[in-house]
Image 1 (tube, rainbow, N blue to C red):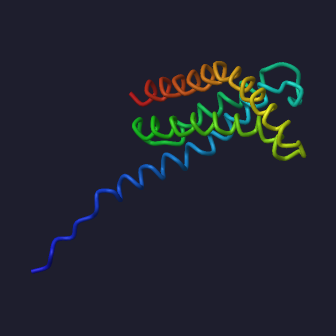
Image 2 (tube, rainbow, N blue to C red):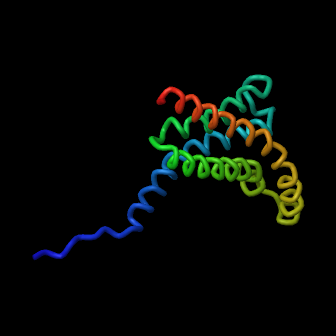
Image 3 (spheres, helix red, strand yellow):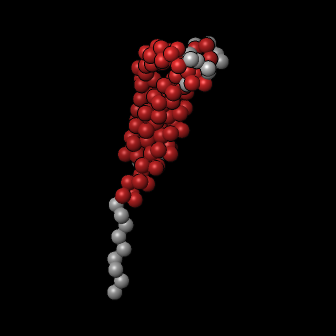
Amino acid sequence: MSAPTTRPQWGGRVRALSRAVSVGLPSGVLAGLGAFLLSQPSLTPVAGTTLPLVLVALGGGFVPLLTDRLRRSVAAMLCAYATGIAVHLGAYVAPLWVLSYPPSARDLLLLRFLGEAPTVVFQYTLAFFAAYLLVVTISGYLSA
C-alpha cells in the first residue's frame, strides 16, 4: 500500500500570487509611467493630458483581460495599482540620485518632490479604476 501523496497548501497560494504579480507588474508599470507623464506635461510628446490618461486606463483595462477569473483579476489589479504608484513616485524622485546633487540639496529637494508627486494620484486612481471596472462590467455582460 502506497502512502497518499499530499500537496502542500502553500503551493497553490504561491502559484496564485505569481499569476497576480505576472499580470499586475507590467500593467502597473504602464499605468505608473502614464501617471508620471501626467505629472510632467513637458515630457509628453503631444499636447494635453489625453495620452497619459490613456496609458493609465490601458494599465487598468488590461488586468481583467489578461486574467481568467474575477478573483485573480482583483489580486492582479491590487498589484498593478500598487506597482503604478511605486513607479510614479520612483520616476518622480529618481533624478535626485541620477544627477549629481550635493547631499544637503538632495534632502531639501526630496521633501519638495515628495510633496508634489501625490497631486496626480487622484487622477491616476480615477482613470485606473474606471477602466478596470468598465472592462470587468463589459466582460461580465458578454460572458452571461
